[in-house]
Amino acid sequence: MQVDRMEIVKLWFDDYVLGNYNIRSNPKMRLKYQHAFRVQKECRNIATSLNLPDEQVFYAGVMGLLHDISRFEQLEKFNTLSCKKSIDHTLLTIQILEETNILKNVINNERFEEIIKTAIYYHNKKEIPEFKDKLTDTFVKILRDADKIDTIRVVIVKFESANEDLEEIGEDIYMSFLDEVVIDPRLTRTKVEDYIKALSWVFDLNFEYSFNEFAKFNFSDRMIKLNIKNPVILEKMNHILTKIQDYLKKKKFSESQND
Image (cartoon, rainbow, N blue to C red; front, side):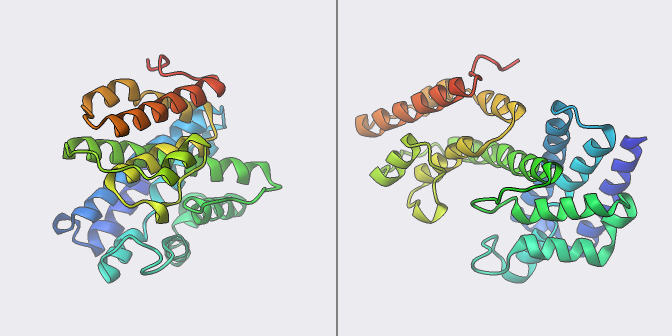
């Protein structure tokens, strides 16, 4: 059964991570540990929504669980999640997967082993090439969407729970969003701009499931709860909300689809 095989991968993941790293004393490691299981679930959900065969749904789940396994080593050695300040974690993940033979042991399909490694490499890249192989293209986009869905969720909760006064929103960030551009993280200067950057990932989503999950965040209600007092910031955030709603409608999804 596929479920049993997925449990084997989860046990291996736990043995590898908990056996090598003290995640209890490192909040960032704990966050990445939890992130791995949520992305695993989202990858399976997206693959299922695309009516992929059960075997490929299993592969998608494996991909999601293992996609960030190098983050623990990155934090252990460099105490940062910034690849620019340390290492390209996607390359290290691929190295770990090859050294441990985990993909070969649980998948034993050379084509999909390569597809998964390709998807892992591109899951955090700003742009992706046009893949001639349809399955490679699909798996790359599955992982990118699943990773974004969970990260957006985390960013939203963290931002809202901070309950801070919203700082300035730069005109460059604001206009980029209205132009439906995924905001470059190097351009953000404030926490609210980091929040808007995460919202801009909607412009890089690919699948109906992903848009529906994004719509479930229900930004109309969330914007009210932010209780924005600065009229300039309020106007900009309302325009950003309108852009999100218009974009989802353009993609034939809306915030009302949240059952």
